[in-house]
Length: 133
Image: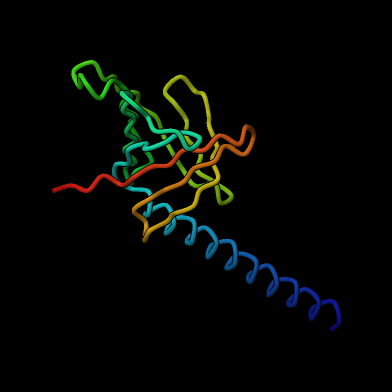
C-alpha cells in the first residue's frame, strides 16, 4: 500500500510540475505579445542616434526585420531579417547570419518605451514604439 500511495503522490507532483511549466510558457508567450510591432531606437547608452535610423519590427510569428540607415536618406537604408523570442525572461534576437544577442528588457510608459540592456556589456538601447496612423 505504501508503494502505491508513494507512486500516486509522485504522479500528482509530476502533474503539478507540468501545469506550472505550461503556465510559465504561457506567461512568456503573453509577454512576447508586448514586443509585436515596430520600434525605433531613440538612444544608445543614453546618446541620441543623430543621423542614424534603426527600426526593429517584431512579428508575432517570431520573425523580425531590422532596418538601418541614414535619417537624411531613407533610400540608403538596408534591412536584415532574423528571428526573436523571449527565453528565460530575456529577449533573444538571432540575425540572418546566425549571430545571437540577448537583452534584459523593461517596458516603460505603458509599453510605449522599451529599454534593452546587454547583460554582458551593459550597453543599453532605448526604443520608442512606432505608432501606425
